[in-house]
Image (cartoon, rainbow, N blue to C red; front, top):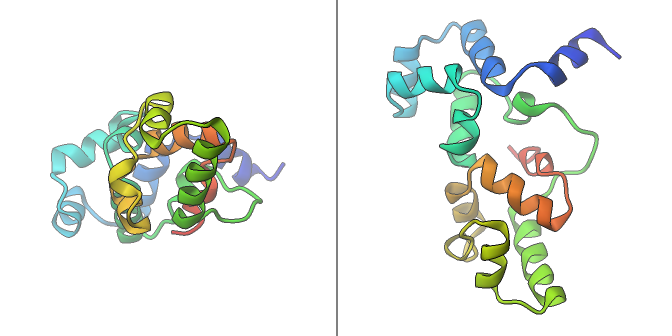
Length: 152
């Protein structure tokens, strides 16, 4: 395996984020100004392994990554599959509910995440969903959650 690819697959996302920010030459203060996230919160992203996946929406993660010149997928390891759009996820959620004979609310109970507010609009879906939520959802849908990041 290529040494860079091996490193990418073993380095934690919060460390990759910090390395990319440092490579870009953007300070915490500048990133705070450009993203609207406080400096202490940005330091938390770089310090705590699950901060970036549990606190920030996919859209906010995309904004942060864009500022530091990184694609969100680069935080979590590249994959060789096709992208999965929000529209695709919304269709799969509806199909899954039909195939199980359950309501959306019952499916939300299964995954432990509220989906109904994001079902109206694909954009809203990613504005409300964190990476952790996306992982839980995609596990139930039996798809690799990282496919959604290929759209950003």
